[in-house]
Length: 296
Length: 110
Image 1 (tube, rainbow over the protein chains, first blue to last red):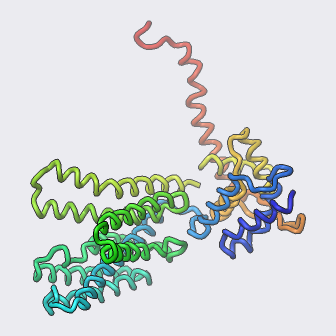
Image 2: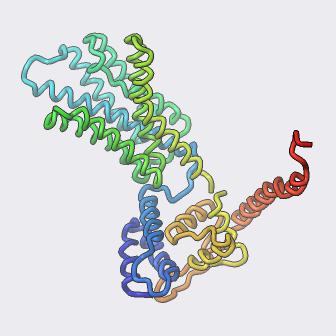
Image 3: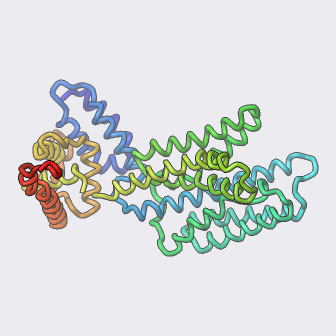
């Protein structure tokens, strides 16, 4: 056993959460050193990969078995929060831009007041989900959505009027009224921060690089999807939640196609296939992984 | 039950073992097919302890570091036996039929 190898493994073990390291660090180190071949001074690649993965799983809270149903319930809560946060952030930015623009507002005073009410109700819904009060969350999110529907009807502006992520968020929260997931734990509880990053990229790209803003926005969504697929090795619940988040884009597109009338069925089919590809891949891959992980 | 879990539990059926001994026994029982890396083994042991299938029965200090010995619980032993019976039954479906099928002429050629 070499001192170099021991030092390198000790450094690798620092990847684990401190509490886990205190409980298991010395034992893991003993096993790692016993398993090493004579004369080895550097950790074996497979041991490094297993330690990195083990550490990430410990942080993600996926070092315990979880039933498929429970994984979906946790993903429903994360996806509902992501949808609520994304819509609220986007709408809040639109209101702030409108206020700072200096010219006449794009909204009537009535529509603006109702939008502010909707934003407040939406923020209450987010708070309620975080506290596990799903009944209040469903009620406030529904009220916020109805308020924005009134704004949409009064302005006739479908794109800027509604909180179109809210219906799916409400649908995802309804099962949680009867089947409560355990309190949020692990890295998946930070998933609602991801939509804020998307809105940030969206706004930053529009302000700094307006010529390629569309490409950057789509790139950010693709990066989120790709990252979630890679994260499947650690925790499938993020891919489930992101799959549900991007599924909403497909639902909105379907609503627009149905509402606007399909002029070219082939064009509509291609548009649906492109929009539906990411959510289908994410949801299928994460469902398969969850089923496999549910086995002991 | 996943194959690595099956062999890790099987490695503990005769006597309590510590981490390295579990890895060696798992490798021997599976004829080299399953050789868990240390990080993988401890993730599995955490999961199995969470399920109530294994527990720590002894701790000692070797080279100044902790060494824990793991043993099967009665639930772990029952789960292992149930899985073994399930695998044996699945194997019988093929093994018991194979010689008869081999001597029978293919349909349509007789």
